[in-house]
Amino acid sequence: MSDTVNIGVIGAGGMGGRHAVNLTDEIGSARVAAIMDVDAARAEDVAARCGGSKVYADAEALIADPDVDGVVIAAPNRFHAELTRTCIAAGKPVLCEKPLATDGEEGRRVIEAEVRGGRRLTQVGFMREYDPDHLAVKRVSDSGEQGRALVFRSVHINPGWNDFPGLGDVVNGSLVHDIHSARWMMGEEISRVYTSYLPFSPAMPDSARYVVVQLQFESGSLGNLECNSDAGYGYEISVSITGESGVAQSGPLSSPVVRRSNAIRQWVEEDWLQRFRVAYIDEMRAWVKSIGEGRTAGPSAWDGYAAMLVADACIESGVSSKPVEVDLPDRPSIYG
Image (cartoon, rainbow, N blue to C red; front, side, top):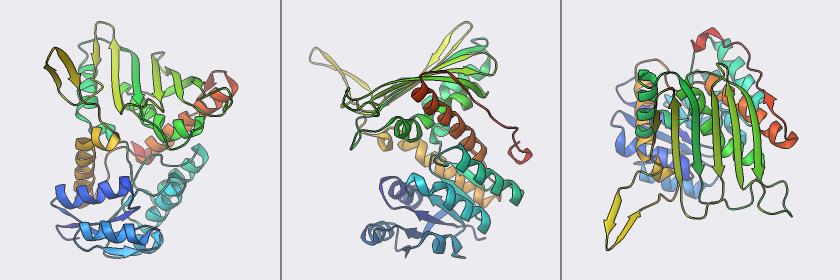
């Protein structure tokens, strides 16, 4: 492999387009060698923005391209697991956007494929591991200065959806990030969940406007995840860890507080791409560096699988209105 890492990007929409531009503008050691999207015009536009990348209409053809050293999967969620397995079969490092799969069973097949190959090739796009605010809270908690971590909390505010999402849409599309953050920041697995949710209206009982998940970790510590899927005013994320003698908490916004003309105001980000701009760049920089060094780091396929098992339990709990235990199998040795 040369000093330049050649990347293929599957999906040229908002997320894939952002990754492609970040690779081109921010990662000096990377080159976007290929773009794939079913919308040919969109793929051509992103390819031109990246300096003339090859354009594919078929994802498997891009993965098989010998000039592609690593693959970013930003296709619709239902294709994530299958395309990740294709990358594993081809021996290509892959950064798969969340969720890794549509459910735990599909995620298990990704794990089995990677274990058969005998090495990690997959990183899952849980970019909050690279967010300065999340990292700052985790550092304080890990330092031990607050004593044992007792409670994890996260609040996830979305400005709105194009339709009326169901419970599965909200859990798999949004809360899966918070599920991973809870596991990663507390440093332990989630053993039990209890989900409550509010529909958009009594006439749409299967919709989910506001979802609250109560967690119990293996040690007995607690957690609470909240997700407003249709806040209407902008995008916010905040996390906190309560310890025995203190609390570490991030602010919900990254913009400055401005005091002027007898008022206090603060700009609210429009979406996750704005809020996590730095995290997406740092995530991509770390992933490209790991490819160049012949290793895989960051959130693993196991992290993606474990998050999906918790997500499945959250959905089951919301439907049944009962607590659900999370049955997590033993972690294969390749995941440490």
